[in-house]
Structure formats: C-alpha cells, structure tokens
Image (tube, one colour):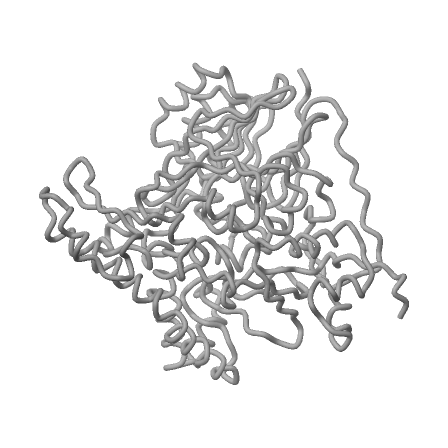
Length: 535
C-alpha cells in the first residue's frame, strides 16, 4: 500500500459526536442540563434496561414505540450497560448530587419564599451550588434559582474529557437507533476517537471531506496504529472530491438540504440556516445534498433555536473549519434550561460567534440579516430562539423555522418596518410533542398530565400559517419537511404517512395559497433548488 495514495472521507461515512457514549446534543452538553438529564433520564433508563432487557429490545423493535425511552442494545451487552450505570453512579456522583440539590432548592423556595428577602437562603445553599447560583424573584414574587452557566462550564460538572467522535459507515438511512435513549457502545465496525470537540485536530479530520490526505496522515490525526487500517480504510475513498463552484449567477440560489436546512447563495455571500446534513448511505437512498455538495467557505451559519434537530453537533463540528461566523439567538440568562448557545458554541470550538436579539442586523455586501421574533413552539417555556429575515438585493426571505403565528399583529409590525416579505420558509409541525417529552427531565416538577398535553412544541397550523403569510404579504411559501426524510428517523422518531395530520394541514394551507395565485407554494422534501430573480 503506497503512502502516495490520497484518501478522503467516503460519502457514506457518518460521524456522531458523543458525550460519555451518548449522542451529544444540548441536553447532554451544557453542564446543568446534562446533570439533570443524566439523573432523570439516562440513569433511570439504564436501571430499567438491566431489570428487564427483553422488554427494552422488544419495544425498541416496535416502530410505534420508536422514540420512547427504550434502550436498543443486545442482551449479550448487558454488562456494558451495567458498567455505564456504575460510571454514572460513581464518576458522576457529584453532578447527580448537584442536580438533586438544584431541584430540591427550587422546590423548597417555591414552598417557603413568598416575598420575603432571599438573602438568608445563601447561607443554607448546599455545597454543590455554592458560588454557582443567584436567588431571585420574578415581578410576582415567584422565586427563581438562576444558574450562572459560564461558571458551570468552568466547574467539575463540565467533563469535556468524556467527549468523543464515533466514525462508522451509514449503510442505510434508518440504521441508527434513537438518539436519546440508546448509548453508542464500542463495536468492531466503528472507530471511537476520544477527543475534546474544541480541539483543532477535529478540523483536520473533517477537512478530509474535501482535502484528501495520505493514510499515514489520517492515522496520525486519529491516533491509530497500522493494525487499525482495515477498519479505517472502510471509511475512506480514493475517489477525488467533487469540485464545487461558487454561485455567480444573478439573484439568489437557494438549496434545500433536508429537514429545515437551507443554503442561500448570491454572488457575494453564502448563508446556511439550521444545517442538518445527511451522508449518502452505502446501500443508497433518496436524493439529497451532502457534505460534498457544500461550498468551500460559508460566510454565516444561522441557528434559529437550540433544539437537537436545529443545533446539530455532528453537522456543526463537521463544517466548523469552513464557517466564517456562527449567528445564534441570545438567551434570557434567567432559567437554567434556557442555555446560552454562545457559550455552548465556544465550547464546541467556534471562535467567531454573534449573538442576536430581535431586530439586530448583520449587514453584508448587497444586503443584511435581521433577527426576527420567534413565537411559540417551546411549550410556553423561555428559550433562546430567533427567526431570520435575509435581505439580498430586492429579495426579502423570511426563515421562520417552527414559528407559531400566535399574534399576527407582530408580523404586520414587521411588514410596516421592513416592507413586503415575498418569500417565507416555514415549519408546520402543528401537533408537536407534549411538555414532558424533552423537558420532563429538567423541570423541578411537572404540571399535571392534561397541562403537559396542552403545552406542546407545536408550530403553525394551516390557519396560523395563512395569517402569517397574509401579514407579511408573501407570494411564495415553502414548508419544511420537518423530520419526514428517512435519515431523520433516529432524531425525530416519526413514521410519516401520506395523509397524516401534518400533511392534511399543509395541504389545506397550500390549496389556499394556490387559489390566491402565489408564485409558488409547496412542501419541500429531500432536496430542492430554488432561484429568486435579481429584480
């Protein structure tokens, strides 16, 4: 084997970011959230699996239960699950204690603090929280334990030595087990690279998408030996990378990348919104744009909110070396679940991060990016979130993500300020998950069942979407697929049907738009290319 042979990452090579062998996403990364999620979700699931692994396996194979809290790990690896539980109990004992203390403190204040001074409680803080929290009231004398997130990232609760990357061949789109419930155990078909996400060596790995290197170079980056070559070569290809030419045409070229990911290109700038990029499975699948199809440089990546399918670690890390600036919404800094995306991005190794609030503007040659208020979709909880209005030449394009048009007047106000917005990209997950699904593990106490079901992470239904479109004066609308592509199953746990509730509402909205003679109104899926003229 000649070392003159150059290799790049194969199109089917997927790379998952992990924290202690669980898929990395905001709730397993930010120290406070990770501690709560570990206490109230991971630990409970591991215990449940060890008590009855057969039920977990049987349930994990049931498509209707995909997305529930069942660990899909073979029984012959139960010892590995027991080892994970021991590690959580022993090595993470300090973080589990902190999570328990935080919940207990918040519940104690809820029962005792009715408007009197909170200062005496500082002397009663548990050791795990001393120096890391501030005690506050809201304006109705309801107590709040404010976690100082930046300090927690400097504390023993941020265990970045547990970060790793898992390299494997994606055989087909639905090969991965559910991201939240099933840990990724070492196996003979994967390479596990123990490395902190922020290290520059991560960029050297991901540059292999477009910059082939020798096998010895790749081996050295990953810290592998020649005995690992057979496994490593399965993840590489000698095939030259595809040449990607920058868009130099008139107007705006928009490429839909799947889920809610959009690539926007003019002759002057490249923007990427909410990227979740899929690899191309070795056994084939539906058409999609993948990493080989992206430009060599991306000026701005815009993140609308911190949900796991919008702030996607494995995509962001893979693109980090070619991103000029990451744009993220500012959090309130009051509630511990409303984490700072800016702080998280720093720990992910991003050096240039802009944090925006509503109506903040980022100018670029020939246009600007404007942060737009984002209502709804977050179960009535406070979270960092922002839609974006991209003005490029004469085009005004609103990327509304999962915005729920709860107040049409807000969009009328935006139209009064910025003029007619011709083009809207919108999610219509009009049912959404109940409060307990993602946030149950984080809250000091859950509301009752009926309230959890009523408080949903839902976007606009047909009526709300039409109100939004009318308010901004749109004549083009594109609805995100939002989890319907097959490669999203492990993240979204959806079994889409052609006539499910989402499709019925989308079809209803699109029919009205067609009756109103919209220039274009359609639901996106897989991949699409859209051209907006200069004038």
